[in-house]
Length: 123
Picture 1 (cartoon, rainbow, N blue to C red):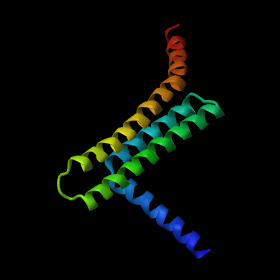
Picture 2 (picture 1 turned 90 degrees about the vertical axis):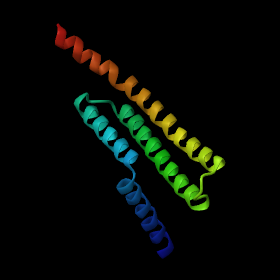
Picture 3 (picture 1 turned 90 degrees about the horizontal axis):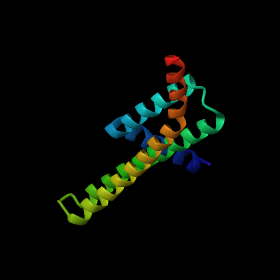
């Protein structure tokens, strides 16, 4: 049981480290917070909340994996190396893909609601 508890402690330590040290993670959390506020303002459905939560998890997890890979590459290849650079670029690209698809998903959820508000305002 102690090993299980310790594994959760280590995981939480990793999460805290990434949130404290990574600027991009702070940006992701800021955007997720804005989406939550908009979700309440526009009263999104339970299904839409679940989709938003999945997007948050996808982007934040991708950012954490990217950070772990960057740290590992820096450890094993402190000097400039073409392959090491490629690994970092691919990991960063994975975060970008996750973020772009999350943004598209957000637009699909929120644009019709924003459009309705705009049309109601113009009437």
